[in-house]
Length: 178
Image (cartoon, rainbow, N blue to C red; front, side, top):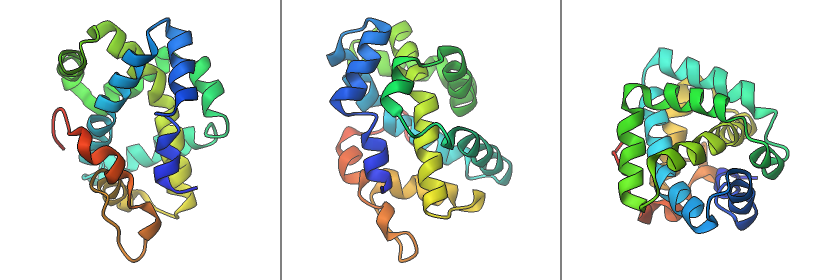
């Protein structure tokens, strides 16, 4: 499974329905928030992974969560919002409120609901990225490049199977840039 398929797991109808039912939020709103937020989540992780310490921390988190990539739909149905909130705080740091408010403004979904939706997907996103990282043999030093390829849809000769998500996410735009 390539990273395009892995990350597509978070935006599919089954995933959106699982989150919608778990949080009691309209599925169209859930879909809108996920679509708007993925570029920002990935961009912030890429920025964090651009330093040696940030890359090591992200690699550790991906490794920790990678084992949970087996049944994403079940994970989304029973998402640990506390863990997800901690993940979001690590990803966005002091900018979390601004990010939630920006996504809220962009989607018309309240910032509390945006926070819950993102907290729902955060552990699964790390699990899916961790599985992709392991499956492609990428170490901590390659994480920023991996995330950049996902965001930009570019590929390199050593990781050509990771390009393409940019074609899915490319038209979405980044709320807060990379």
